[in-house]
Length: 114
Length: 112
Image (tube, rainbow over the protein chains, first blue to last red):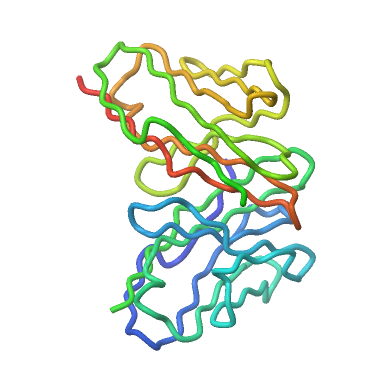
């Protein structure tokens, strides 16, 4: 069964460092998303991406965050200068269209900022 | 502000019990409501509901949506220990673009 894959599964980084979280969406999907879940809290929308550009971003997704799809398969989330409060589980999701298809989620990357 | 509220927050039952999980929402530009099961990590898809009153079933799980009263329920009959998980309700909105607004989840623990 096709699945969304994310790497790494766990990343520990020092405050102020840049991190790149990687996702390989399901191959025929066109719409890509990043969500995050701070431990014990709800899953929150960060950004949606379609046709090589951001469709929408939440207020969490400030200038420290960026996304790109550099090679047509990987979908990355970059955090330029990590803060302690960026510690969370980051989920990538993809869907093949917007007309009734559910989003499939990856297993997540647990980011710990120390 | 768009809001999705789930209840109860947590629930402990014994194997064989039936449980009902609730999800109410207030969103602009509602498109669909989805239920996900989250065990260790990734939310896995259970149901997508778009129409009121039509029950969706998958084995022991079923769900229904009421768009007039703005809520959905997820029923699990004859619960098993493998049903222990966090059940997430998400509402898909088209405010801006398509995205999900998640509730906090209901943590279900099924005891043997």
